[in-house]
Length: 139
Length: 184
Image (tube, rainbow over all chains, first blue to last red; front, side, top):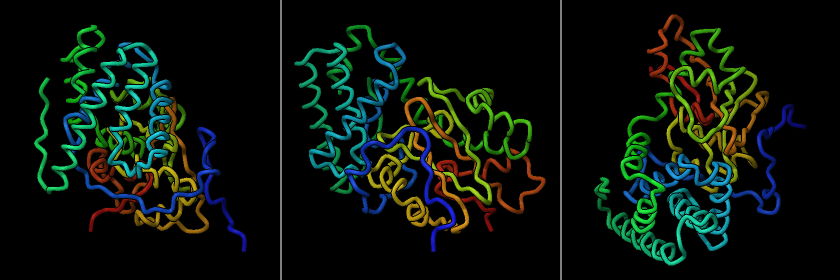
């Protein structure tokens, strides 16, 4: 018996990449209403991206395109992409955009990448150890 | 992170105080309570509801909630015939001004993919059973267009004030992955 109603109607953008990817059958991860940012570096990259946009360094569609590319690159490199690595995508996208638009030089960007990787590893070790990361901001 | 931040500060591209203000705003000031005010007002004021459905960007801005990314807002209303849910398939576009920053699951690859390939299955995972006769509409957000779901007003709330109604409205109901009920 045919379904009396369409299963889904898609509006907004056309979905270009879905057919070749196939459906993702994994369960959706669930999180409690925890802190907005899980570590200070997440808040820092978020604020940098928002503030650079406000100062006219790029348009928001340019940012969204950079983020989309960063997510695709991370998935291709084996990231399970369950939401917990989300701000790493922001870091990668900001690096790419900053480099593309001449906001920072290559040496600074590679130093940045190393710093982020270190921060993220440190944060994950704390999570694995079951400890609570003290969350504050010093600038 | 500090390396780039320092460089950008030195170049005069960003101001450290402004960075702190951005963090403060999104950690403490912007969140689903904003969206709940919009929904409660739409439920209680027919003229506001009409404005919201015609020009959500302006109707939402009139309450002081304005997006800073230049996005347009669209309100989509759940009814007994239609259930709306929102996704961003490509990244994580989300109506920050009314819902704050998105939860982790919204940003996860399984939600971004399955909201499109199997919306009814996803809704079931969130505890929402949608009858076969109800149409499910999935809205794919973009950098320029963000969606706010206006959930169905729960039964048993006749005569409630907008303030009291707003307390019932959850984040997930405004993404379209939850229904609302009056707590027993």
